[in-house]
Image (cartoon, rainbow over all chains, first blue to last red; front, side):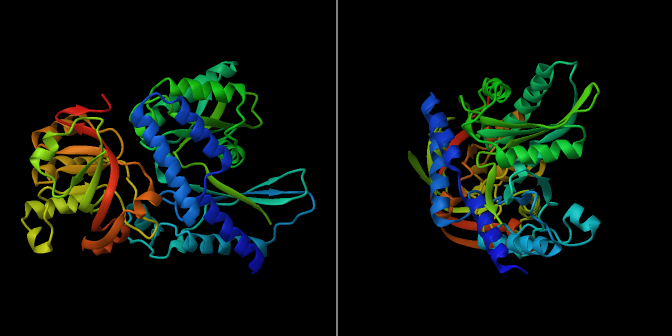
Length: 282
Length: 168
């Protein structure tokens, strides 16, 4: 076990679960300026105040502390070994105990884990992370992103095909239609829409995770801004109580595509605290 | 912002309207999918007094209680929303959570002069406002057990009262 790696990963998980990034804070401040409704402005201000308290205390932003998802960028001269994987996993365990994460690992057999009859593990660190996503990059670096993904957006997220009719706007408009429904039902708006578009459900979801890891609230492509603006026309607003800010931004990653009439779109309406993400160079 | 202290009276509810921003202080209960149907059964069987639970004028906060803190889960989850009418009949005045409720649930709240409020999922802030927590029933459910908290000025917005909903 590499104790240096364990400590770095532990600290990064705690940062992911407790800290708004600077561009995220800026997005909230912009939204507060633009909101016309008193309740909407109050919701945004309270969410931002919560982030400041969480950062100061290095404690959870939300009691649904989320499932750890890991995304690793690997440069040409870096190696991922079994020992390094073990150290990363131990860092996650220690990070969950430190944050602390909500102890929500379900015990038991396949059936018991499905119907939750096996009970909960009291150890926050027992929560297994999702499978590690690795991507090779040109930069000579080994950079780990830790994302903490909550349950609400998982309920409202959808991964499904779109028949694009050889028109990118058809894909965007379908994303908008799905997002409008998910954002309205989420309850924890304003959302950040994470989108991955690939050739299979697996690839689309991996791209969506990358979009969550690398998206920036201050950098929006024309299509991302179009999606954000259209969903904001619903007036769902913060916490679903009405207002101009249903969505703060859209983070979209378009991968390689198939010679076919179909695209697979993964969409996650990330909640008001997400993407809860921090990164570290290992 | 107006402060409402538990136990909540009929007069307190009469003075509210949709969109009011209020603070809640005093003892409140917590519960979500796993325990609210059990509370309903124990209420119907008349077992709550012997369990030390008094629903009159009470609050149910739809949350788990864990070392990570508290924060609202969606009140429109099947078992949670289904508990709102019967627990209002049993004396609960405020259901505290998030998300849109069905029209029939809003009507049931009106029938029992109860209300629904949305609380922001601001766990870090809420932690500073909770001064005690205890398990009242079903400890086997862990973080989903039926808890009682003592809270000081939980911030919320009245989302359904007197047959009206903020989502309409």
